[in-house]
Image 1 (cartoon, rainbow, N blue to C red):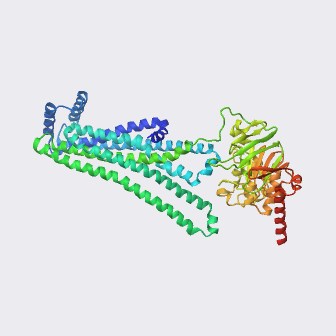
Image 2: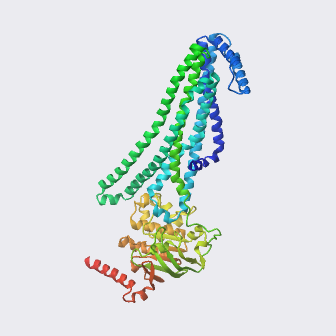
Image 3: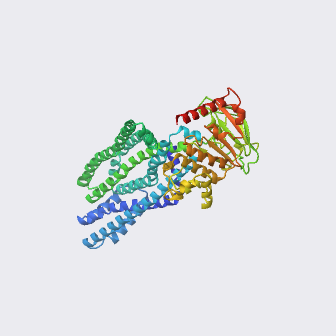
Length: 625
């Protein structure tokens, strides 16, 4: 129940719409009851029982104690008297016409208020879910990189789409149905009791049985719905992975394998859906069947009251039946509302799991802005390991980079180089030690000001499915065309851009699929250039490129390095000969450090081995040609 109360809180800001919905619901229920209650005088008029009915009613009022308070009885009498004075006076055909007009008006108002109530409730539904989706999305950006390493993309997408959709319907279940249906029941209950409280009491024998059935079905729905949402997320994940990796799937001829994997997930989903449908669909027919059983007894018992006791008239009994049977749809709806609430709670658990995840990387209480970078960046005895892992990725890393220096990291794959540079913008925080900028621990700076000083270009460049112009100017709201073109020229990207059909207005597709690897990298460098950061990080930015693209990208990188403090991870040692300092990392530790000439002269050391291996590979490739 706590989960569902959290859902409801998102609707509270729209209390004005909810209040109007409530008012419309009240009038809807009253008009609904009025339209049914008018069948009694209509039947009296048609079958000429008006006088008899009036006598019976007068006799009942005198001889039978009322179940209502005195003020309710007086109000009822006044309404009845006024109705009789204005509607039931005159010739039969005139009375019939007036009753028909009142019935038409009652139904018109009932449907008008129902229409308004539905529109107001829809606004609350969509607005509340927009707020929930927005809050979850904004919170997602606060979560650290470690969170995204554990969560599948498809699972997260499913939470923002499928789960939100399930939750949305529960808003109306609370503020609309849980008001409208009980209110409708109360109105018709009032009508039924006013006609015969004995018959009404007899009719409601069904309620305890219905409530037991509703509670049991709701419990089953909650358990099954949670499994269903997880399985739907699995399908989304498989679909997302297959679409993203379609080239690999086709290259390895794995279409049949992926088809079988997908069909396995959909089959499992299908079985769960069927289970839920069987349980969900059982509530309404069971409730209705029990209602019909009791209804049959009511008809028999009420018929005896009409035929033998003359306690109520035939028209009153028919009006009573109309009232009782008008109560069955809302009772059935209430049984389904419980199911919807249970389904929504299961879906909401998955959304609130995101919101309840506290970011481990966040601004400290007294965080300050990093306004200027003046002197140096220093690693002091930094050690790091990922959550839920016992293996240290980095061990006791210490070095200092002066402003304007180029620091290069080399070493075997898996040595911890990428993790090391990820610590600088605080994608992760070290478990031991600290990273200082101008002598101040970077954890004391606000994340926004820290990262605003940095530009990052990685091997796996991410571009957005929009124009080249918007990709280069990403994050900059007011940027002139001249600056964008200048950045593109510096990044060796301008020439290929102007050859495209729409130039800078060319949409490059999801992740930039319409461009080559080298073109994507040059756009990423142009994006970093336009940001004009004081600190640059290159994570193997040329490792996946052909020779021609690598030359162009390397030229762009060298331009970007000028007058900036730069950290470079390079797989080709020839690209870092001019680095101020080269740091060799192996198994998470610094094993060598110095300039290229110093390191290459150290026989038997790792740097010289790596350099010789690359040099041999280059010669072999050259000889092969």
